[in-house]
Amino acid sequence: MSKEIAAAYRASGEKFIALAKNLSDAQMNSAPANGEWSPAFIVHHMADAEAFFTTRFMRILSEENPTIEPFDEEVFPARLNYAARSAAASLALVEGARRASADLLDSLDSNAWNRKGTHSERGEFPLHAAVALATGHIEAHLQQLEETLKG
Image (cartoon, rainbow, N blue to C red; front, top):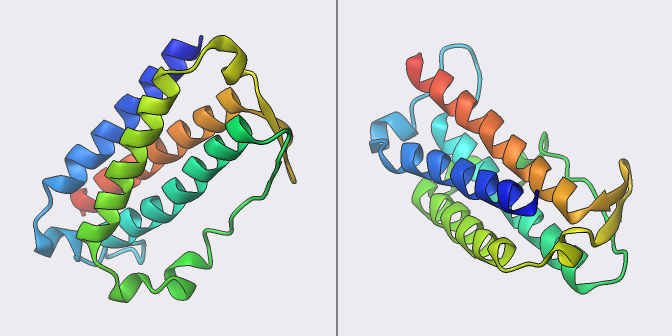
């Protein structure tokens, strides 16, 4: 099970990164007609989310039953100043965090995959659930990015 979860995590990140890296500056900063996020905002959001996910993984692996707090992605664009941030820098963060976490996950034994934290909203939160959540999150935003580019 753990190898499949790690492989899905790695693959989902690679797909997102490959698509985002191939966007021109004009595409990256285009404003969708429906009022959704621009591709740049999606990349900034993923950078911020990956920072949270990576920290969650490390805390679950290194601490005894850490409390895992949710993050409020609705406040990120304004409070974390998406409009003034570099999409290239955010994409580099996504790429670095994903590669480092994927390499770490590939090195784990089955005991590590069963280590747990306690999510303040979800309750018991084993590493494999945290990784699956991160995988689903980037997949959803990959789909959002693809839809945004279709216009």
